[in-house]
Length: 134
Image (cartoon, rainbow, N blue to C red; front, side, top):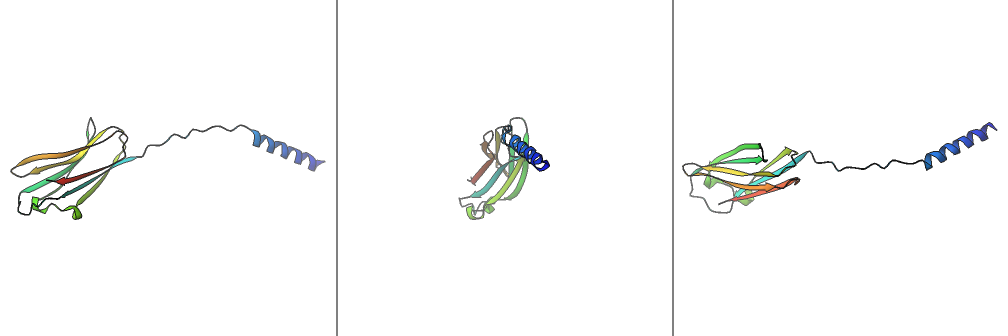
């Protein structure tokens, strides 16, 4: 009789466990912690006789502040690498879901400065900025 009672209680408990309601858990997608911007710098033109110094910088900005700004190199224009030997820089920034501006600025000694600008849409997690200097 004791065995029957234990068996009956166990079956009843198992029945309650199986038929009990379960909570629906909504899974919310998580945002990545970083956004990645890859910068490629090269030239497809022949500057072999141009001995001016050029200084390149990288930048990333949102609408209110600069998130990254760094001078990467000063070199002779004739030394800017061809596509096969391009300079590659990758920068990860903490997630900022706003639209971003990113690109290169450069200064040519005794000539002036200019830039190459691109944008990352809000929520875009990867951007390749491929710049062929001309």
